[in-house]
Length: 340
Image (tube, rainbow, N blue to C red):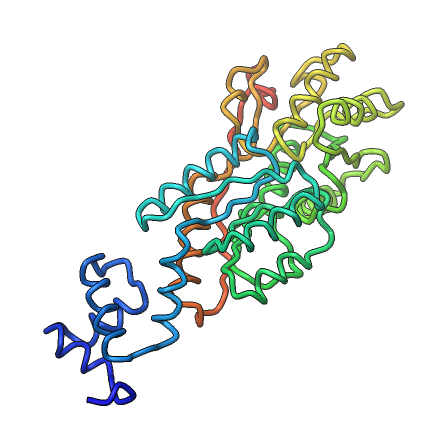
């Protein structure tokens, strides 16, 4: 037999298996066992059969690592997402390399290029708050390295993404403040350039418009993620001549900063000021009062991100999708005026 004439059927006949089994083995399908896959690869090499799927599998064999880039590992959402990513990766015999951008665009870019040099099989990213130049992600795409964004994503790069409906979540949270009687509702946001922050701010603003509430000009304040800046921004809201009676915060960390500033100011929560955060971190239940927050399915977000990376690895010809996971508001005492 001439090697140039080898086919899937030749491999199947040699091994005594079906053509579909050979095809799946060459594509690295998870249902094909490791021994069968190795046997198919060996016979395929011996017969001279080569295909894009087989070449892709050979590349995957050389790299057992998935790069994961997050802003900071001490955010509960990212710690849980990493657990979800690792859970799925382990089922594929893969390992993850966890990197922190520390909210820095420069560091994020450096990490991406280092991961490319290491030859990782794919990269899962939640954007740094400073990132406005996405050329490093476009370089990943040009190098045919699978890329998935989760939680924080950018519209400028076309790839798979896993998020919640941040607009709807912000609308629902703001509406909750309206239903408990708040009339002067503010938004304490993250960095203004961050796309996820812009979407949440838009949901907040549209809900005020829906209920014909006055959008006070000083009631949209933005902050970086360091503690001192959060406290400074919270004080800016609460020490102004016109103070809010309800606040939607970009994150639980910012909501906690608001609670600290409110207590400094002598405001009672929720009587004088109702507060809602995002992320539903475990500490929320332990605060006094406990914090109302938007719950995000962090573990599932990680699992889905890993699933999408492997989808790109196994089936690179498939189109990209944006998975929107469900979120919900967990109501606690920081907005529970009925209990008061």
